[in-house]
Image (cartoon, rainbow, N blue to C red; front, side, top):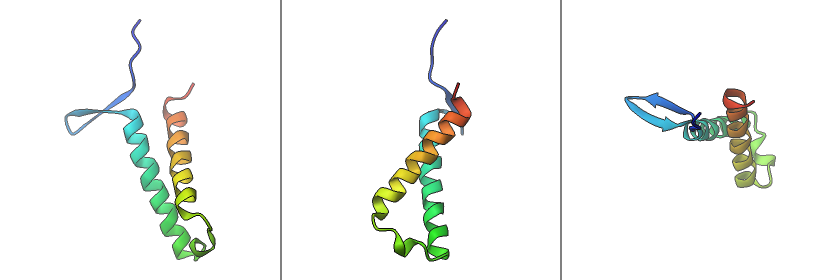
Length: 70
């Protein structure tokens, strides 16, 4: 039995699954920022960089667990 990291075949190349999840997390955090700006909640967030970085990480880890978790 051989262990291997999960990969995706996109456009003829193999990408590691963590990279795909990381990109999805970044896109999710950007979407969250746009949504917060539309409902004018973004101005009340004191540490924006920390908040959106943590949101991206939470989306990334949640997606990883959803797709590849136990």
